[in-house]
Length: 227
Image (tube, rainbow, N blue to C red; front, side, top):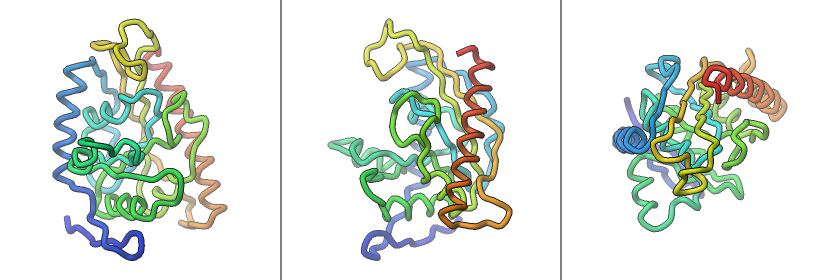
């Protein structure tokens, strides 16, 4: 598919995230996740096989992003906080097609890169809560609605559910090694209204609809997995 030149801060061209890099990142994720934990993937067939799509993931562990990269049926470009792009991680994350975002202010370059992913028919991964927390979708930011409506992309809710047992953890923010982790994909849905409006009110309404769908999916995933 043709790559489209984009403009970011001060009108400078923005290089779209690497599709090949994201595929390599998926391969690395598969090796790490299945080597260190025991993922059980449910409903991956619900992710559209082609075209733009957004994976909206709850965020309770540092493992959530890599786990999804290794279990999703398609390569994923994640929006990742700029603080993670330090030292050798900076070129590595860029190389595997991930998108750096400044959460402290509107980041035009990140927005442009994310929309380029969708315009090229790719998969954009977003933590709608903005940061790691309870992982219950209780507090959503409007960014997800903006990308879904502006990028004309369906949203697939994803619940990553790991062990809550703190024993055996080498790192507090990760599930114990070799423990089971469930990744549950939900049905895709459209966030916008029938008129395709992009006004602030329309995006606020879309955010409410998104939160309802994501919360319902998380509750269903917990009942399904017993976590």
